[in-house]
Length: 310
Image (tube, rainbow, N blue to C red; front, side, top):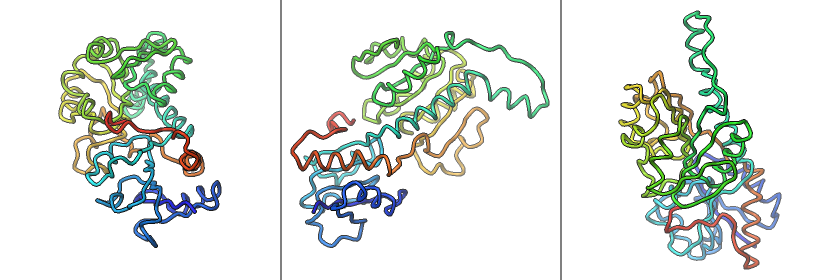
């Protein structure tokens, strides 16, 4: 009987257990810290594990992340070395992210924040409206989610570019890569979407230098990680008018402290890390499929390159 350890403070163990066992009835699910015998655990499904929780499992074979990102796992000093790490790959997770990004891109494109302000001022005024073809969107990160939102924005007529650490190609998307391509990518981007994984190379990538390379009046939408942003630099860019707005779903400190300046800034939209939430009913398919693959000796899907950080 395969045994899986579940550990998350923010996800329902009951929902996950039901979803997993509906697909794999013989799977035993243990919820941390209630374990009969640590030696039985072969698989772990976790968000942020307690220190040494995974290292204490002598027969652990695969670690599954409850989210698409895995920086929270790689930052665990007790992460067992040599045990495969698998990120969450779920079409519903990708769809949710594209819904969020489409909403905010269109909100900025159609100047809905300006109209909301006009309503509060009892002001009836039609503002200039740009065609999608005249609006330049830039996506940092061209993985599963970046590719999906890029295709949807292209279908709406937007001029879309993407930047990634390594060379990639996508039809109808102008692709940039590496340090040499970053400046040109930023210079043409009016609405910047950050979907990058958080690594040593991407930490603080949205800083005074990169924000100043955007066209004046650009906006930033960050759904990657809070660590991508130098917060003081972002505030200065907003206050100076270099940026006209920012939508932030992720932060260095979560929950965002009530005293944080972001809360009351008129140009910042805050959401509480909800751009796309993992749904056990759909995501369990990915977990169970990989458990079966592992037991059959087949390659795992969503396998992380731990050295690269994604």
